[in-house]
Length: 589
Image (tube, rainbow, N blue to C red; front, side, top):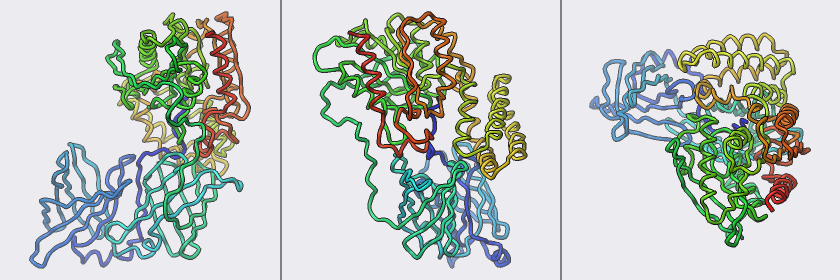
């Protein structure tokens, strides 16, 4: 917990790298609104690149086109375009929310506001003096592989296209992580130099063109610099092999199921796999990690719960895996629910399993990964139907303690100094204190933003390396995206939850596995606390393993960093799979 965000998660936060327009300022004073205007619409994570094309006919009639650049280019004709001196307004027909723009020109700048669905977003535009000749030279598809210390990490594809006004836009694919069409938020070509950034990823690229077919450069993300050379490419990169994923037809039955958590009125959808035959079979319910997860716990191009379910079902164990609230076929909201709500969903899933003709109700177990390792003990203390628990990277400390330890580990892995990592954790502690003191979400959000501004100055003053400084600026720049999550019911409850009192009441058999390279749920923090709590419970059947060279997803890894997840072909280490299946079989004979 949180299993969280892979290095190339998709959130749109755009800034625009424009050509230097200062030399055109004087000429712009004599120009009207005719021509191309390029800039941004919105603020913070809602920012988009936009372009307006305005044309005046010989008879004085105005027409125009508005372009929105995101992971695709959306083009709309301006309707009801009215121009009054330097001010103008227009609407967009046949689009929901009655979108309308009102703004004015001053020199080479247009400022205004775009309103849709009653929400107003600021618009800032600069006059485009002409086509971007240097930029148009790199239109096309480029591919390359991130490398660190000579070791390939992941493949990337940069797609540069021509858009309105002779400009360029770009998107990036990370096929190894299953990410497609991620917007490039700043882009510039100056002579033989290529620059682009993806602010929401805390990443930027600086490269030099070598002729017309190759770019040599460096990608920097979260303070870590990696080699990235790009070459022109045609076609589609092959998908990374995921050799452990099963292919149909399966040697067992797979049933799509839905049922209702009657306590909360939430419909849950999932897949039940059962071994061949009539049964009854022992069964397990898989509980996902944090965030909105589908039934396969899909992450970074992997589907670990699909692989785990396949392995267990082949071993004679029925498996139910379920979409989280608000995902796939399940209703409700993940961020609007708490660990208690997840426990209620799990209880509803157990009731479904008990009612199924092929399931042995005497042998029902829970397998919880990451945050699911918090939910599983809650359910086990509330239901006599739970016969055993398997905790995969299950935290045995409070949410706050886990997040602080996670912060230190991830910053160190990104190359920060230990002093910086520890100071950053203290900053996070102060932010969590605000959430604890202030129950009002609006007031808490404002206080968090104010505290983050002061924290940025503090961390910059304490930085002792360029990495520390970069990490500070990246954290501060992205903090506005986080406040909405920090004030949700899900995060508030998670922050204050401490599983130890619950674990001290768990007396069913427990298997717990940790990865020695797990940076998100460090084994050194949770293993001793789990041992102590289960000893206090006088639990007679406890097995705990810390598995060498495994990361948070139980893949065989080199560093444990999240950036590695998608580059590893292995989805779930066979050793870990065997330990889980053999342990369950031994307790359900």
